[in-house]
Length: 500
Image (tube, rainbow, N blue to C red; front, side, top):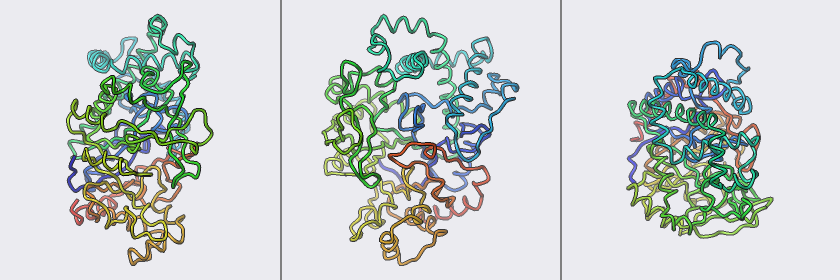
């Protein structure tokens, strides 16, 4: 895939402003698209859009195909007659700067339940034909997901491998009984998914009209407690009791001395190959229906995965086990054509990873915050003069500190290296703008900058600290007034002067 010289901004929709405690796919999302267009940008990069569960990470979703109900624009539901003014009478005390996911879980699910109840009892019937068409078109994943969520609700939120054996193991008679008993719940789940995809498609068309393409994120692994695993257990490594035998993670690295124990089940590549890699074909097709470009998180896992025996307390005692990424991508390309994929090739990158990336001509990634560590930093692949044209350069990603925060917390060696390399002495106030300029001036075809860096925000605005859990991750939001016209003007001037 070839990317023309261009640039964009990284912002997850949950970080959008709005009146109901979390970003939505409505007016503020369109306002952000308008701002991107005024700033001369061509791309909006988002993180995975799936329904989040415990920990609130978009990289641990209940489905690789479903959308996140929290993002549904409630104002639009009121306009469609699915909600009434009285439904908004008793609003919680929302935080304009941080998402409270626990609050959203209770209040927003109640609101969406009311929206479905209005529809089920005869309201908004102008949506009926589209809803019925959606159910038929998306049945391949939607039926399993709806039943999974209904069963999960019926089991008090327990993971699928804690359900009774017949349901856990998907015995046909148990599934048939569950479908009959839980019809109301499964229809509600499907209707909420219909609302999400309807609104996302409207937003994506609006972005396209403004000349903005959307880069979406696809995690290489899926969550253990997901409809994907429950419905396709033979494609992963599990024992007869529904327990994983090995799980995913990464070895000790820049982010953690003990590695990262993600806990995702690992793929049984031989079983996937025997099935013609159909699960992957379906997954990429689903992503192509949502996004213009796809960033694959942890691309190196398609060459080899860090396999950790289950159970484990850390990721230290794992081993690299070869994967079948080449065979899989060949099958997907044969089915879907050339894939618009960006490979997140960070971390422990070996020649087999580079070969897989280059054989399929996927652009790789570079993060400038990683360029200035160590003593002999001149050989660092992420220094601007070492970047390749077929590459996407970032000042930082959702897993990094903000660029301003990085400079504040950088070691004296890192700061020294930066000063030597640039013959400059930046301040806390000027560093983010300087690193952004370096990204845009580089030879990399695409430059992406998190909105936090354009707003010159400190560590408080960091999106995620890998290897940690808690209410500080995934919660950051900006305010509408933060998208100042002068920032858009400055970004447009930088974009034009660097030929992007």
